[in-house]
Image (cartoon, rainbow, N blue to C red; front, side, top):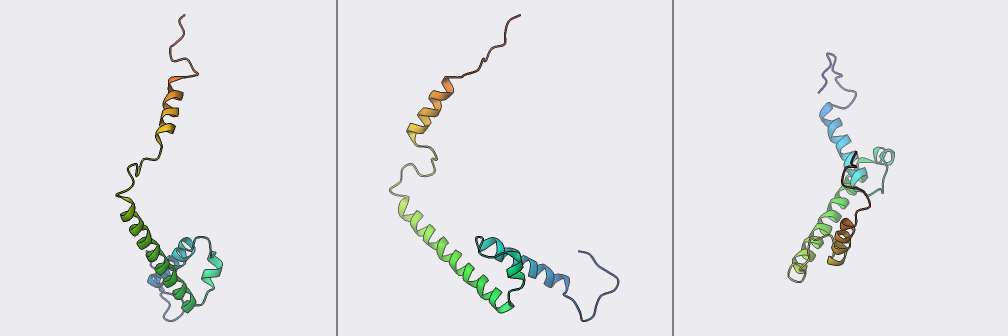
Length: 109
């Protein structure tokens, strides 16, 4: 961290508080899903900023809980969990790879 010889006694924010402030601003802008821009959050009253952060945290926790609950219920019924491609798509890709449209051997001189 940068340290200067002259430290203001009263005016300005400490380096620690600035880090906390800018981290909070970043997190609120980033995790709001595009609901807020930096300028709006920076000029937001502190009480409203804290309230908004707490509501986003609550929402994300409920969302995580719902996702975890749904994954617990789906594990026993899904046999193809985590496989991104269905079988018919895999077969189509394999057929395409067998039909190459380029020459794989070097031309003879």
